[in-house]
Image 1 (cartoon, rainbow, N blue to C red):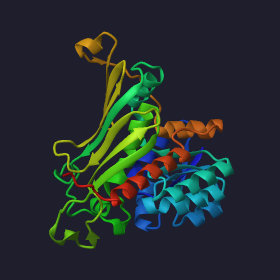
Image 2: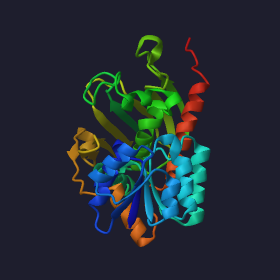
Image 3: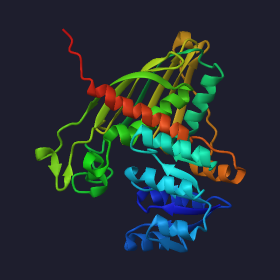
Amino acid sequence: MRLLILGTGSMARAHAIAFSAEPGVAIVAAVEPHPERLAAFAAEHNIPNRFASLDEAIAWGEFDAAANVTPDGVHHPTTMQLIAARKHVFCEKPLATDYPLAKEMADAADAAGIINMVNLTYRSSPAVQKAREIVLSGGIGALKHFEASYLQSWLVGKHWGDWQTEDRWLWRLSTAHGSKGTVGDIGIHVVDFATYAAASDVTSLNSRIKTFHKAPGDQIGAYRLDANDSFVITVELANGALGPIQATRWATGNVNEIRLGLFGDKGALRVMTDGKISSLSICAGADVDTVAWRDVDCPPVPTNYQRFAAAVSSGINGDPDFRRGAALQQVLDLSFAANDLGTLKVG
């Protein structure tokens, strides 16, 4: 596979390192409008061809697939260009900024017959893959309830840098700079993680979304700090299970952690990952009566990068695909819509 990397931001480096390690994959070109960034990125990863625009790269055409690592708001137009050029696409999440655009991308990719995948990175957790396998095998019986959390704390601690002085964090707090806040940034991950493990999709929801005061006038330089910081949605799944899905950047003491509990009528599962290390435990069988939990061995699984390379090689589309990305975007869009309906007061 001859791969083009579109965009040279921080995630592009992860793509370049991962794809460079794959047998049969050659990174042949990079696209970036800023000459200095393009030169530095291409030199670091030994990329021979450099383009200032996607139009130039498509006119050149000597690539089979593209990793789209552009800003969220650019995913749709650039991916549509690539699809029109019959190039396979591995797109960063979220697939688009709203469901209609995401659906258009999925429809176009299917019509063109190209390989299409969205980089939901936590699918590479061995624990979530094993949890789904156990759920599908009936290992915890019929799912009745679940709870899922994505916990970050970079608005509290400086373990990732100082958000008040660094553009790479400030843009995530500003809707004018393309951010949809916690809902758009990490909400897509925890919704996918929970529903994938539960092997069932969301059928209904309600939500509360909140933006907290963070600076004088809620503005730092050009950044209006109006993107949401925390959300809680309560959902019902197609299998009837009910549960909360939440995410926040105010979870003091937590760097980057997804936690998931799945509770069935014959057992339960606990899943955790920080993106690097993951774990799974089960309470089932006789252990239900003694409330004992046992660790579950989780063998390694392919990364999304490996799955995409394999899909291009085989011609059989991989998972998670654009259709999945669009379905998740619909849930996020409905979360905003449900929040806008307001809160009913008690008493």
